[in-house]
Length: 248
Image 1 (cartoon, rainbow, N blue to C red):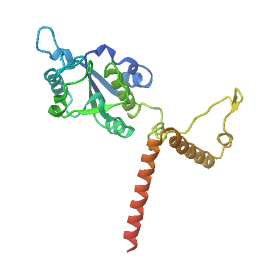
Image 2: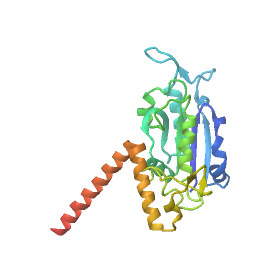
Image 3: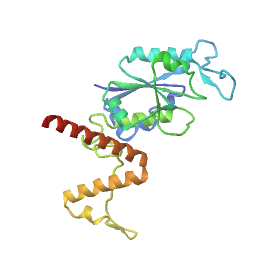
Image 4: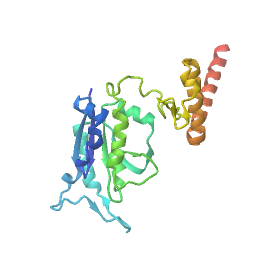
């Protein structure tokens, strides 16, 4: 099954961009994923190919029109009916590694890239579009965010990374940040690789990595640590209830 990425954009020339290089580019050449771009402007009905209008109620900027977007989305859904449609917007739900894994396991994804002040709000309810944010930042358009989303998905496709386990211990895969890495030379500018990593004792190395992963998550991302602890407590309480039921 080939993962199909369909991009709805006013700037199709921005793709594949960096996705045409390195692992993603090689995977594209090998047919592990495919890329279609759809020009939103092609679905405008006036002779000026107008895609935006002034915001209702006044204000700065322009808003992408619901009727044009709907025609574009309907076209894309007809081409790839099994793919979810995602709009990149700072008002969306934060993207997680878990959602990336769900997407990469499917047939593909259709990504709607906004510009100007964003989308006419009616399009989301009318077409059942998933709103996704990559961070608490504002970009000039959805295209850079779409590139990030696709890169995260593509690297998880079978055959893209060298070994199936390559992404198993990376940040966010288990709800924690990844442990730090080192390589030769052993000493650099007076700083040395931690002794445990040079010990050859795999059990001690695994314990150190787990400890550092937890320590770094706790100090750098207390929000992640809180969720991780909550999930672990919930899992433990569930296991205790199950054991109690078996003992009765």
